[in-house]
Length: 150
Image (cartoon, rainbow, N blue to C red):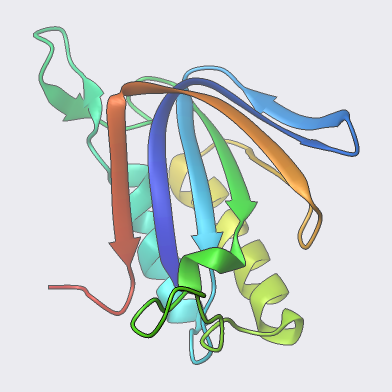
């Protein structure tokens, strides 16, 4: 599984012109599920996300997690995170998990993140054509891949 985590001042997701979810200060998390990913990947990533110290403390040092600052969480599925760009100019999505794996693992990640962070995780709509709006704070953007744990 791959995540792109962005520290945001606010973010929202809309489908067909209707706002589905929105958050204030917190994390916008884009979630990509690959073939072969497991619940262990979701568990590891949920723990990392909740504990990621990318918010400023009183001294302005990135020392606080989303939990520490009482931030909000928005997780959006994004299969394009699995793209391979090694050959040519058209990305290949052959590594992307099908719906039968991707939906349960995305949902599992969200529920585990809720447990780890002790707060609701808002979501987009899996497989929909979503419009995401955000104000990246910093900017701070972190990429985490559960296959690279070192």
